[in-house]
Length: 86
Image (cartoon, rainbow, N blue to C red; front, top):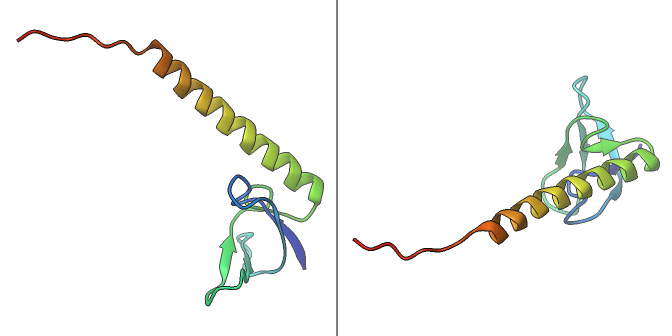
């Protein structure tokens, strides 16, 4: 079946692959050209049946990463240095 992989959406983009559901835990197995299969866990998190759902998750991931970087930048901007005498 065709599924959309969002596990690596921020680095590789959303991948549309042929995959098989391997167990009742909601895991899919697909081949990315390597010697071993790749697994994605959790429908709705790392893989999706619908393109819209994959796009929504990738956007959520992007916003979360932007928020994290903004927080780190603000922390660096507030950082001050002082020379301490001993």
